[in-house]
Length: 319
Ligand SMILES: Nc1ncnc2c1ncn2[C@@H]1O[C@H](COP(=O)(O)OP(=O)(O)O)[C@@H](O)[C@H]1O
Ligand SMILES: [Mg+2]
Image (tube, rainbow, N blue to C red; front, side, top):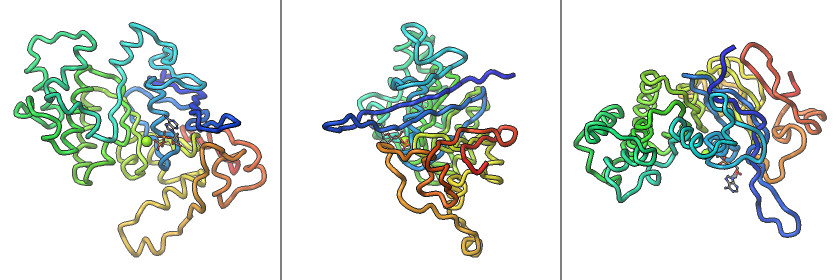
């Protein structure tokens, strides 16, 4: 059996939220488990607020979990300290959605890209040549070396953020809605660049997005998240051809269809009602209040993830 590069098990993050008399918790991530294998892209998709970013931050240990564990190359990330934690920070990194806040506005591109090397005490013989090479990797060049972030477009800033991470020769990158803030044409360029870099450097990605089309384009496998839980995981093609969870079906049905005729004839499985709040999630299956197939059991008992066919798991009482 191949060992996964990232193994997530029973991961939970509860944030404290107000509550005068009684302590209230936002159950942002509530017991998720999955693997990410070396060289693959696992897509993580779901509506805004379902816990995608929190999951990414937990894996990178930017925040501490309430419960559960994350193994990276077999080591429990939640217990790393000192030198080992520093080594992990070099191997695993994150690209954020907003390229306008992730770069220090007072630093030149050269300094921005050299900064992580300084933090990790890495010497390079020819820093200017080193940074220039990285700039070419992300579609920029030496004329950009001594410019400041405000002189770049959103797409170019995202390229700089990616170059800064590549400087450390990472193994694993969490891409958290990396192109959601960009124009569609720029989006495609950045996504293609990320794919090429993955091939060239054997990178492993967790690709987070609320956009199923983008996730499909990028991912080998896709995990669908709903209100702090994973409801389905399958190879990308399988998920689109044979979605099993009623929530996955509803998500797929909500993708706009370019052909107006097809849009009219396509059966619609509408999600009704608002997503319930992670502060007070319903007992049983969290999707039950919005699910057209919900039975009594669904409202009482939480379904566990179950393998329906090879590599296709779903948490739903219908199966
Ligand atoms: N630091 C925090 N403190 C309190 N609540 C938080 C914090 N971070 C996220 N949340 C809440 O956790 C839930 C999941 O958030 P997030 O992981 O950002 O979702 P997504 O990335 O899927 O949009 C949301 O209800 C959000 O408001
Ligand atoms: Mg998010």
